[in-house]
Length: 353
Image (cartoon, rainbow, N blue to C red; front, side, top):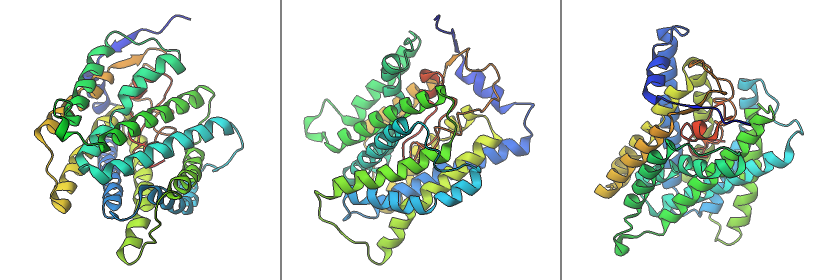
């Protein structure tokens, strides 16, 4: 089957989305505000993990799944969806497993990196999505995607400071691993979308179940620390802020184009940097700032790729905001994932789903 041609106009698409005549200015404003609130919610979730320095990452993953499970009924009320249908169980289990491993690696990276660096490395999901799509989605890598991927690769080397062995931090490997497993989760979501699967709530449900299972398997090798005092609030915050981010993202996709949401979600990096500086006196190295800028620029360049077969309507939402978003649980936002390259840059980390 002939591959659909690709439109290389990311900023024109963004301009069209913002000037949409199909949406009132008040609706666009609401979409922008709710996207920023989603970004802040994800940042608070990361901060809650940072405020639990003594708690092992496996245990945090476990509690994140348990707390999130209690909020599933609220999500069902909002989305009007059932949390279990019994369909596509194998693929949903894979999605839950990959997303939970990504979340575990993300918590691990927070232990030894600044919040800003952890969030920057989480953006590598777009890079790995482009590498995996030709293999699992049978999509040909467009030549126009190579510059964006090179930007991301060079940016990653800058964040890791590959030239300075003494500055190397093994926790960067966990951040990179989190990006890889996030991309794997997006691949599964893409396959689910091809089969017509649309239940965002069910994806979130499987994610909570596998977060509990992955957390239990990892926590078994660590010393358990039961939360006491303020730690109980931070543990609850892991799930509560992820759920609030999920709901804000849902509202955002209802009011504004998915491309606008994708651009605005990069504010998460800024919020993480600010929180790290304000609460933990974290100062990112100049190499991290430069590398982070390259990664964001490369990810934005990847937004250029939009297979014609997906949709010609800049204002179309379809699955993009509904199915992949839970991944955000930094698997934060996604879209109508029919084309892996177009979807790759419009995602976020598996924090919420």
